[in-house]
Length: 252
Image 1: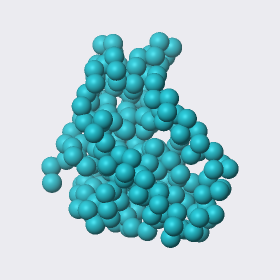
Image 2: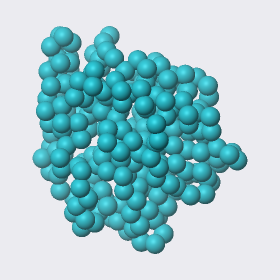
Image 3: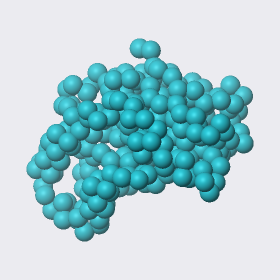
């Protein structure tokens, strides 16, 4: 994609709408929708890098209620001709085809390569990448197993949705205490993942969420890792203007 003059590409992640409660996340949703309204004026594309919801599960005819302001705004933006891309995170990994059918927004489950104005980007949520975190990787295999999802659908939504929401919030407490401090390059799994990818192929930028911590890390003098932060504490996002990628904070 060549970005038209005056247009930009935006990246954001980790809203965790619904946590810790629907009522308490409503204010954050309002702020996020305001941001969407502002950036649509010059957006060439919008990338949502996962965990938009703190929990999401699609039954055949049922999705979790709420978030209508966000869903409506995304539909409006997509209908206006602005491309929107969604990457599932570890909290909304049970996303099926609702976004694709109802909003016409493509859904990606693995990191994907993009090229903008001659720059190469590797984009994803970031969960389960790099060395370590073996417990989560085993859990993810279970949760993404078609049989496990089929069995869970036998729970009535009035039971299945609140049960999963309870464990989702209990597990992370929105952001999780382990996510609020930089661990150092040798202990940050996503940084290790990026460096390993660079051993076989060059990327100008790596864009991930998941960590809830705004990060801009120079990897080798030619490549940069950006973590977009979150919409819980930091209200940060990344912006590419066709020449450079900046990490910014939304002022509301």
